[in-house]
Amino acid sequence: MKKKLVISMIAFLFLFTTAVSVASAATVNYHQSLVHKTGAMAYEHTKYLSEKIGSRVTGTEGEAKAKEYVKQQFERMGYATEVQPFSFIRRGVSYDSANVVAYKQGKSDKQVIVGAHYDSVAAGKGTDDNASGVGVMLEVAEVLSKIKTPYSIVFIAFGAEEGGLNGSKYYAKQMSAEEIASTVGMINLDSLAVGDKMYVHGSAGDAGFMREQALNIAEKKKLDIGINPGLNPDYPAGTTGDWSDHAPFNSLGIPFAYFESTNWEIDDMDGYTQTEKHGGVWHTKNDTLAFIESEYPGRIQERLSTYSQVLTELLKFMDKTSTSK
Image (cartoon, rainbow, N blue to C red):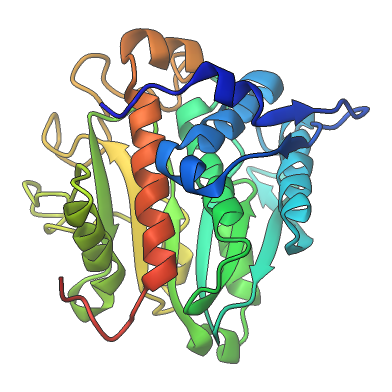
């Protein structure tokens, strides 16, 4: 377990201002070297999205508030930010949603996409699925905001992931052939807070370079991230299924890495059952901050800290040509 968060420090991290009908932006003052180690800011974003906004079902006021919150955060950090609206039809009903896209110029015009969906299902408050992924993405974006990275980074908060990966599918569909060719990889953050184990999955073969580099970083920092052990023959070791926002990019031939917390060693060994103690928490009434912290003390802090550290280092030093330790 990582060091406990210092309450007095966290109290000064966020100063919330109220806005009518939308989630207010959090003003964050912090020392970068502290935050990216502790995951404190990722925790505060996770808490705000899940507790202050709550359920973020596609097409509802909650999803709209979350979209505005993420947009405000990226703009506060100084990123060029745009909202990409889209519509889709599901079971004869039309829905409106949007992606929030923030761009960071790197040393190269080649780019890495980092994505996490901000919507949730109606049950619970979507703390694990997926306020946690958005929290880590926002913390890493903050830490890297003044750091030159090897590749340019496109941070995307996807709308309407639940029920069809609608946001990521829309974004991928809009990519030009030139943009696809210039995309080194896509990193997906989904459900990071509650699972028994921490994982990084990736593309097969040499296209799995981001997974391998993430594992090398975790090993050097003595962080407990592993891979799907391949106990289920449908999912070879180190790989995963196509049920999250990496899938549309994978279908374009873009290498991916996918961070998640679950347990690939129980039940059907397909990664769906997250915990031995309570089974799957996602998509249930138990997906709340209160439940997770009560039943798994310290887990969410450790998870957010670990993923934030590894993702920050991966984006700072990513090298498509090398996976050596």
